[in-house]
Image (tube, rainbow, N blue to C red):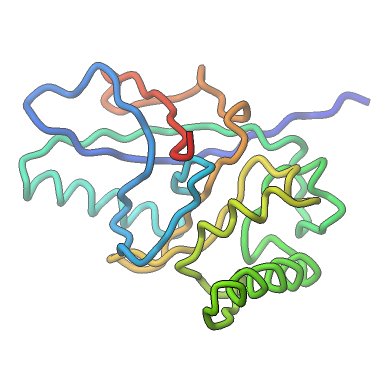
Length: 201
């Protein structure tokens, strides 16, 4: 039986100065109109996913461009996720479907397990407990710790809700740089070549 490898589509945008868009642009730590209190993962590349929020953020980028005179570019980036599973993810399925979309596409076992880890790490910093992943958290940098432990270490990408100036949006952090399909990156307008830079090095 031939296994089908699936991919998810993600989006991003960036602003630039001057009349001419750059020949290259390095994607690193993003500015998606999130507050300074939101700490994103450092060991992955954070992009936008799905229909929840990216549309309003892309619209905001267009308005920001018009208001400031800066140029704006958009990019579609595909990420390989292994075998697509239409069911809610379980802890036992991460080796096959390497994408976790929180909270709606995870079962109770996964949500509860992440919450236990999350609050243990917050306890270690003497911070109050949270209801992540059922509710958004400003400590998304803790995903760097989560993907180091089994079975989360099998995941290529994790999507989650994040607060921005324009409401809740769906962010996705790619932890496996080899999962990015570089030959399928589409930039609009197409004159700029996008380079991938994981913030953590």
